[in-house]
Image 1: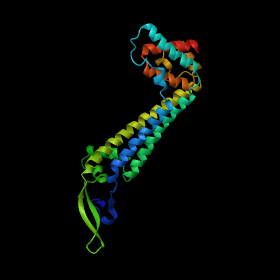
Image 2: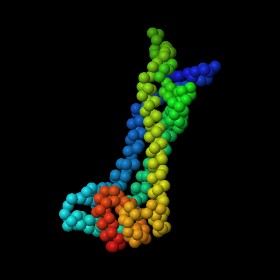
Image 3: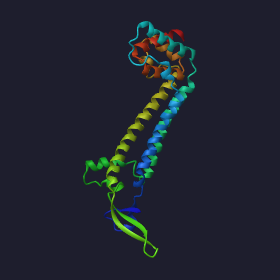
Image 4: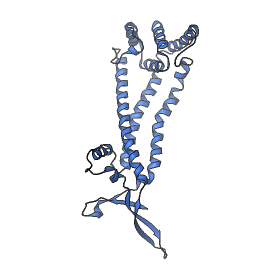
Length: 267
């Protein structure tokens, strides 16, 4: 079956026939794209190897243990950090690589979707917004996802020759597809902005650690002590900062400040 949609108000219909054959493959493409978005997460889980879960074991969230037990757990984490100091470059490289993969993944998926929809996806959300603001504006959803089309069916006749039977077809699935791809357009835009901002922030932090300068986004979230902040900037490498940053996200803030102060006294 071949489905076609003729654009209205055109003198020469033969030159303005637009073929829509992709709607049958929408579920398969969406499944493929969902899998591609899981790939960076899967790679990072393998690369990370459960390191953060191991070093913060028993310290996640609020700790109600007695002070002695709590300090034993903190000392274990501090000891691991001191013994492995300046050895987390590969760990940091893997994390930054996965962040870059996220941006490339979004770019590739936007390109694939744009080609899949007949090069109409990049401006799809903008055109829909114009349509809702100005009702007289053409409906881009009906243009890309027509609900009524001219279909050609090819079947063998009684004598064995192929017959071409054309008919009008209702593509009910496109009523859902037009909404799905509008949400995907918005979601891709949000992901692209967040991913680019995250990578720029990470590059800024890394460059200032390498230059041993005061951080644009300094280490005040680790501790408010300026002397400790200054020492961390001088002593830390990129891998140390990223590892400690992950620890900070998995340990209660009170415990974490004590851990940072203890690390600072031993490095």
